[in-house]
Amino acid sequence: MRRRWLLPLLLGPLLISAGPSSAEPRLQSRVESFDVSGATVDTIRASLNRNRQHSANRVNWNFRWESTPGQCRITEATTDVTVTAYLPRLQPDPQRATSVQQQWDSYLLALQLHQDGHVELAMNAARQIEQAILNLPPAATCEQLQQAANAAGRRLLEQLAVDDREYDKRTQQGTLEGAHFP
Image (cartoon, rainbow, N blue to C red):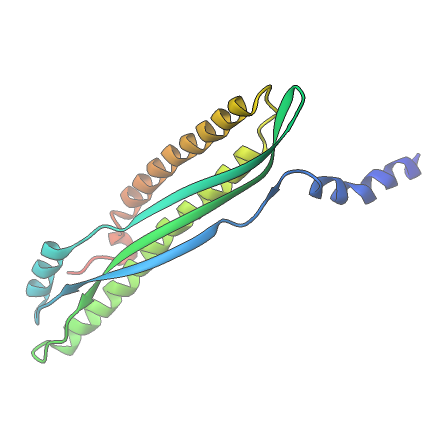
């Protein structure tokens, strides 16, 4: 009886890898800077408020299928995450105190870490989209399968928007992570 179980245990990894394939989502990241100026905390804060731009992420998915008489099934799914981060660039000012510059440096580092949190949420959503598409059962037609795959992707994108809002709420837009310039 033990021998009967040995064969499935040995072949299990091979059988699993023979199914539909996915890959780690591809990440394309771009950082855009916007200028901020000032010598004091108040003038820098005012400039930051005037010039602030919001970062954005986008998740796209692609899939391939195989059609046989009477059914269509997914064979591959991939996702791409595109992130555009807008980070402030503080212009030099000889009147700026070292302590103000240090506050800025700490803020900028915390802001980058907060943005990384949004990127990780997008990457997780991309992984979930791939898995949801790969886990779809075969459909009677490829059109039905395509509709089901795109519906799964859209549903998970809606969840990503909720997750992003919850992340910002939980961190108070990054303030609790230090991403707040006084």
